[in-house]
Image (cartoon, rainbow, N blue to C red):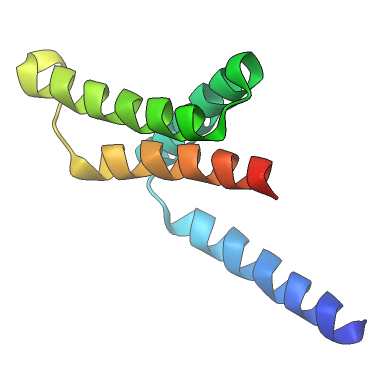
Length: 93
């Protein structure tokens, strides 16, 4: 039991320190991807569709950015897709 507790404490420390190093803008994109996936999962209950729509939202955002509505940044897509993937994985557990 102590080993499990140690692993969980180490994982929490890793997450907190990793999160501090992420740019604020990327945190917002990550949260947006997670929220989109939560909404899709709530309406559909379909894990595949949830992940697909979450990632497509990132692609649409980057497409709009490429048309002059913002700055194209592949890391924005990566953050949105990661937020979507995290939520999807949590529903699979």
